[in-house]
Amino acid sequence: MQKGALESIRALELGIYLNGPYIGRLLAELGAEVIKIEPPWGDPMRNSPPFINGDSLHSIYYNVNKKFITLNLKTDKGRELFLELVKKSDIVISNFRPGTLEKLKIGYDDLVKVNPKIILVSSTGYGYNKPI
Image (tube, rainbow, N blue to C red; front, top):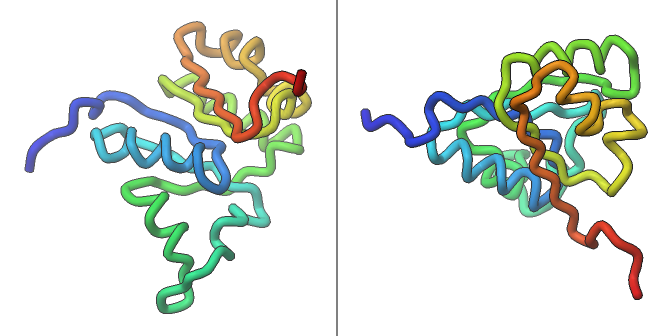
């Protein structure tokens, strides 16, 4: 079996719907270990049609080759566990609205305190600035 170019990379994905999970999928296809972190209520994409045998085709497509865990990042324990994973990871992927990570107390400044080499990949479908 051929090894991927990113086989030594671990990414934590906080993405929901399309662009965050797509970034995670690309990294996973290139051999990175991608751990998708979902809230206890799950990624809403799991409920997006069309369905095959009860599973969302979109969810299947965007989550190929990923590992999954559930964490409630709105709780102290959830944040604590997440930051423990950050210590042993290379990349954090997020496509939350601007300011969400900071509100959860896991913004870039919080991440680099536990792992100075962490890379934060942040993408939003609507941009980071207010319209002109």
